[in-house]
Picture: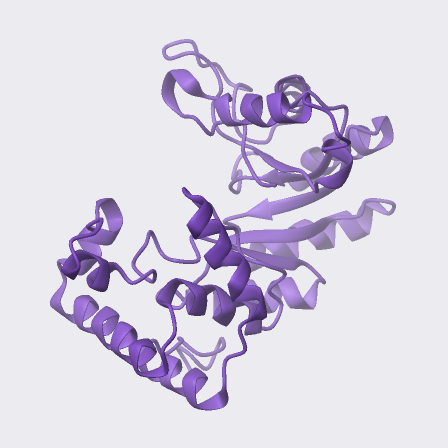
Length: 284
């Protein structure tokens, strides 16, 4: 179960953690059956009241933020406490000192990162190793899907090198990979936001159409294939799904059982070619 302290946004910052906490409170050993991950970085102060240490990864903000998250979540520990973004102003020595204290207190079991570049994953774990006794990062949550494959250049290789699990967010790229053109043609929900902006580019729209045509040829659902493809990728632990309906949840679960043949995988690479590994992707 994945969330962040700022989710809910605006006046509702912290709302999603509170919803999870209310669900845990219903009992049935729900907390024990969940791997709980939340994030720290965003500013949680009321508008106009922000001061230094109200956000990012200073030791004092980490200490305050984890206590506030635990209260909203209605639990006494977080399985994976994730850094939502890099903090260019706080050294990792300070970050790890704060995390070590939380681990000793039993408030946090493991630390993870989100939206980190490859070099920051390496820096974080090298400094953790030098400290001795600090576990370091165990996971990286990054933007990664068929349409957006830049993570394959540096982030995924760094994660593999340091033993991190890769947890892709936006596996359907804002709905683009979920059959958006077919749904619109059938009178269903149309693309909005980032997806609509992307489809305004004729070249991008043509790629999405080619993707949907390929899967129609194989009799497969686009959203399920997008998730199943991520499960074939080296280093990927599992994508983050955010279903709005029971049907979407059932579709996501079917993706786990879906086996993609070599012909289909080659076709997907043709429609959405990855950047290739670094440095070959930009050098030789």
